[in-house]
Image 1 (cartoon, rainbow, N blue to C red):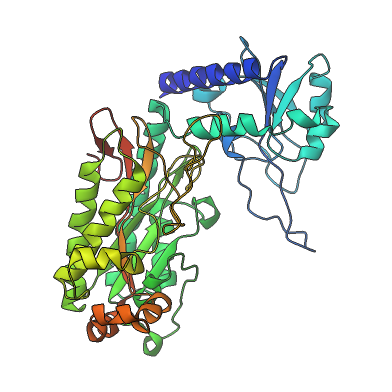
Image 2 (cartoon, one colour):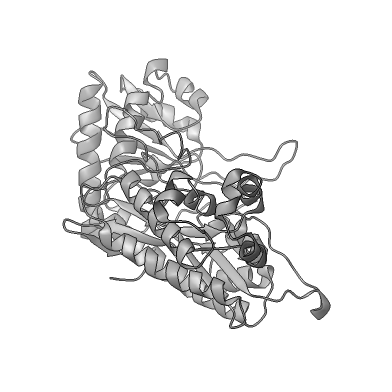
Length: 440
């Protein structure tokens, strides 16, 4: 892994050197990891997450860390370790990454100013901007949009080191998914299932890339369901029929994002057929991926496949062309097919079509698309089609003339089961894909 990491750093150095040439006269770029914060009118810290472009260089999730990048020089990592007996402050400086940097240990972030006195025209990326002003950085060189656009655009292309971290994060998360599914089938509550996932992955909740979505039965129709229902006794116990679990892990700052839907043996037979069809459909979509395919086109294909699955199961009562014209599949799949994945779960640059900041925004009828880019070799994205029975959306259609195109009786039977989502993490290769989730 060390050689792949060194190659990754060499690639980043070339990108940053290009940026400094573009910003004529810049002697270096400073990246700040971010600051810790407390809740409003409280002394308790909120969970910290480092600035993504800082983590692109260093797998260190600590506030007030600073990296200096200069042309033709080893990057300098100003490792700020406060003198503090309230909290552990040590940084795990593993040799596989530390050997790529000159490391300067400091007790306070303000001491960095003395280390930079001889440098002029520094660019600052990150927060807080008041710290950049304290360092004497010119306002137009604090988070210049041209730099952020360039870096955001190129984050979509993953180096072998990054793909290895993403693959490992997938492998770890799958252990949790298996434990969570077993807990569900044994009758566990959403809270029990959540704890089973964390225990299997050996992680704390704040260490996961995002809040686990642990949705049993009707809650699976809430796309970002955030609660974890608990049951104190058997009388309160749910009749577990469907589990939608959307959960990932983080490895050296890189995220996995996996969704699996599990159903009990006694679930409604049509729902079981939908789940089987969705599992097949999702793999069909992945098999179509190749360099040069616009992601928005792939989303359109997904809507057609979802529409046909609903027609085949008598939920939509018309032909595919009429269903698409009426935008009925989007009622059951009201989110994008996927998004870029990397250091952030919804990684940056999903709308950028060039490094100069030009964007391709989603079409008006698909405002929720997080990715409008054309897929290219070395990109990593999620593929996560779904079918949901969401009362808020269905009621609007049923009250309209389009309601006659839906099997309202069957939909009423399926409403208590929430929905289905299947999500894998996909690495685009020169001639197709590698599925980082399924190892193929």
